[in-house]
Image 1 (cartoon, rainbow, N blue to C red):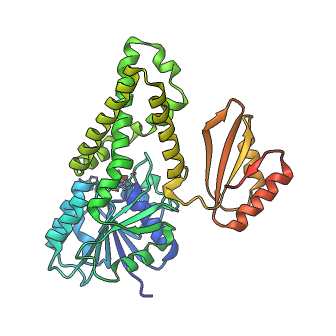
Image 2 (cartoon, helix red, strand yellow; image 1 turned 135 degrees about the vertical axis):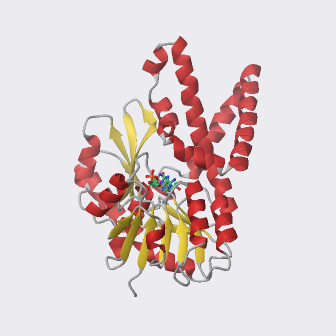
Length: 368
Ligand code: NAD
């Protein structure tokens, strides 16, 4: 396999983590980086995340076999316009990492058609509240969905080539239409962020008049509002590039809230019970207790007491076995017992874990 030159524009959390992931399987590839500020550029050079770095986007573009735009969405579109005016290698692949896809893919098709380049929109579906190259993590995309949104400039073989280049990410590659991507993410990601922020704002205002609000806020409130700490700039760009889908979700939700309000006003206990029960069943069926949609085919459930160091005790027993995920099912805690859900890569690891925990502890182990 020829040694490619990969140009990562934007050495923030996503760009720098992608560079590390590419290097893991392709140490011979040359990775060039662009970053506007020298802070992340210097971190990326010092940590060997990139081989060379620049503060001028145009400098490395013509050397690249693959150009990955990992900057905010609007800037991604600006760079696509810039690339359309540059002298690039024949058949270069231009791709991105933006959290919404329709506007970026439309820009790719609009400005790059007829330019002897290939283009594929992408969204690596993992992240954190951290930012900058300092937060780069080679394992960030492990088991996460890496979404490709093909369009006419995504010629045959382009996505396969990208999968090969990105193999060191250990991500789960999927393809979906860009508009459908934006609709689905409006429901499972964008709208929940709005909801969390609104809930936080509501509670903040309420706390001004009811001072114990802050003190009593515990598990349920924490779980519902964790994502309200997300980076405001990124979320502003996401909402502004997915307006209609997000507004449609808001209207749908308002109608649902009005429906529940009506049930409460009527004092209709059966209907309220059904409402909660349906939500509980839907959540169970969705199997969302895992990172990035990893199938939980190799999961064990351990009933653990609520005592100090119990998780450490289990992890110590599992030393040497590769875990995909670990989750504490707090909502199932009934005062003293909780359920620890541990996901493994294969049936062999799962069986081994079950045997060890059963032999060395008194905790009940279930496999669904
Ligand atoms: P980040 O803040 O860590 O990095 C952003 C990068 O863009 C930095 O290198 C910054 O210097 C550069 N940048 C910002 N504004 C710029 C401008 N006007 N001109 C040139 N460069 C500019 O952010 P990130 O989390 O790495 O996000 C990068 C992209 O990845 C965004 O499009 C985001 O939507 C997408 N994304 C983010 C996440 C996440 O959770 N953080 C997840 C998936 C995709």
